[in-house]
Length: 90
Image 1 (cartoon, rainbow, N blue to C red):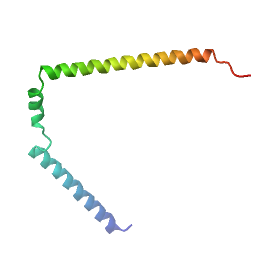
Image 2 (tube, helix red, strand yellow):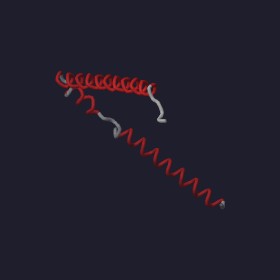
Image 3 (spheres, one colour):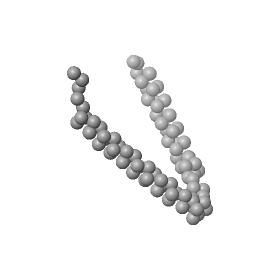
Image 4 (cartoon, rainbow, N blue to C red):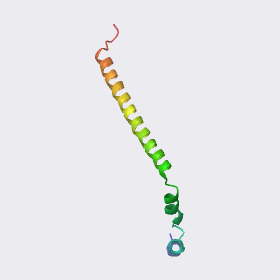
């Protein structure tokens, strides 16, 4: 490649990088990445009923995990028993 093309590529990539950095700094300065209503809404809508629902959902998830773990253990023990009794056909 010629020198001119390399210089052009470096200058264009530097310009685009600087443009991206300026856009990021502008976004941070103007508060584009701040979610101020998040904390207000969390406090406003986090009542007793919502907390009870969340606790109930957590308990259901844990119960489902226990059930699936028991099923896996049962299937594992069943497969081990069937392997012991396996006899190939004559």
